[in-house]
Length: 117
Image (cartoon, rainbow, N blue to C red):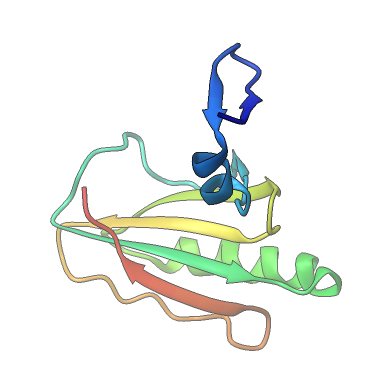
């Protein structure tokens, strides 16, 4: 059986390695200036937003997003930036009421999905 060594000293079979060849790694850094949550706890409603921002618009985007977060009432925000991976901004919005957050259409391509715990 053909195997490939992992850094842990364990081996992966050739069949398993075929499945693992295509993968994507991410390292997310928390953005404290955009995070408002004092604790990460399940709420009745949660949404994960991913914003893809063209690099020349980063400064404008950050200012607009800070304003947007200040406008939110009853919604906690946990903000992340992908420092290794796709470079996207990600937000976990948490609330006890339905969540509606406007998009920054001129500055980012946005994808929202419901999140469950």
